[in-house]
Image (cartoon, rainbow, N blue to C red):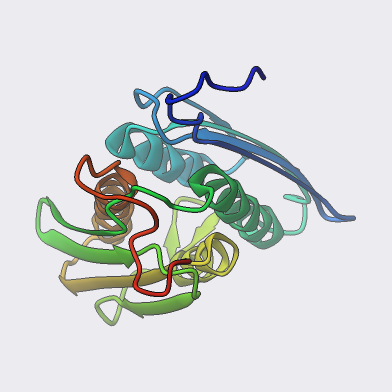
Length: 206
């Protein structure tokens, strides 16, 4: 990749590869994309959620995962989320000139998700869903994994993330609303602020 000309902002792209005895993952993200998504994890519902993240965040996103789905989907989903967070962290760079904070509320029929993000450099997750959700969406997606996806993403992206679903009935809607709201909050937080100079922190670093 050629370096940007003097005065031009650097490309905000990230790439992460993660290989274990359980999975092989490649993630590429461009924060200044148009929402072009190429995702293949072998877990259909998870692919659908990652597509929401790219489309509604306007991130160009490539995810390719080969995992031990003959056991279950846990390792595949977890390792993909870890690589996704690492790619986002690389793409953010030193976070100079960014808005830093973002929030969004997204409804999906009877469900509502509220998400607030701080590109703080300090991993922290607060997550709340309605009780009594259906345990599975389709044959492969354990609904308890949504929190684990967010935990894994936050740990590697080094961000503070609050996600709350105050109400909802359908598990598919509850989870999808979270990914859409996350996408919109990240889109806002990662946007360049034309008035900002340097890193948006009194510490001088994030």
